[in-house]
Image (cartoon, rainbow, N blue to C red; front, side, top):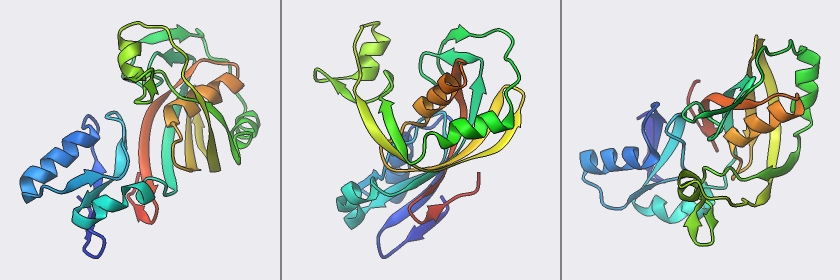
Length: 210
């Protein structure tokens, strides 16, 4: 836990790897003996960083808080795709030896996503397909098509390029799937890819260090 905003009852948690957003809420509910508590937007278990815990009257602000601008630092691994788009999934495609990609090419590809694009919702997501969460259908081996949604990419910056791994900073609007953005970056470079690590460094004005 990093800080509490007593006026708005927002607790800023730097979520560790392996915890679900629900795990964090349950832990704090038990420790603080609070019944009215929730979070301001899910963060995948493999990811770290800002998770806003809403306490008391702040729970009613969920619809507002979930729309706040977000910033991430993400590592994209080229040459290897997983079924989930992240490091927890099964490898489904590899390219063998990854060809050297120039920094200029990578930066051109990254900027092509600004100011936004039509993003396919990942199969492993909570979006409902015929009334059922997509991830449950995916785990059951069912075939289905997820919708596309326009997502806002406000800023995207290459922080480093080391071998097959790109480290990027992304500022985006709500509803953007970083796992899918990693896959889409790879596709524009002509390579399979997945999100190898992810840290949400900011939600609105609330920030942690990556």
